[in-house]
Image: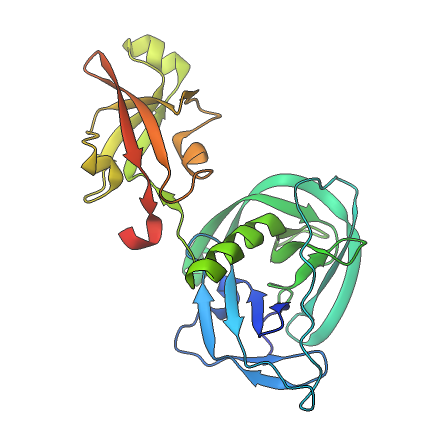
Length: 286
């Protein structure tokens, strides 16, 4: 059964796909290349922070088949709405090497991928929207620009809609691959360790408290607990950036890296203070 797509990123046999494509940790997977050679997947490394996975196969010799040809990774920094793109993948898990074309329909989208009926829902932020046909089975395949460079990884399709597909920006992959190639594993998301509710401007005025992130709970062993962030604290700023409904705590932490030092400006019982916190790896806390 063909269950997804992927693309080669190194001649030594590293292949990128979506994490949800290879989510079954007890299954055995095979890769079939465009010349119909089959390879056993020797190793799977799943990114805890993104819907990405890197598969390892033994590369063929010059006499044993076509040498693996990595795709060139472009940049997702300067993408434009209306830009021409190509999606490649195994449409519906049946039609291999399907090529569809379209344009970038939107940038910076936030979507929920998966289904509660399937046991998971994942929030994906800052994804690329395209009208190039993406179907189940295309997941993990490349979204390519007119220069043949990968600018996204096809990840989801809007159910019940037409010509609305989504791809992770390639810069997310490039950052994750750099971490993987350096350390041999993926880093998780930066983790502070608080459950909070944003205090709106109106609520702040009505209750004579500052606007910010009201701490409802602190995770045991987290960076927040280690630096004595307490329940009922209100975090008003991170590194000088004011927290608001449109600039929530999670939005700022998501842009940080594991190991970053951040300065929290905290309001506690009418007293204000600055607290320095070193963000940890979210995967280590689970």
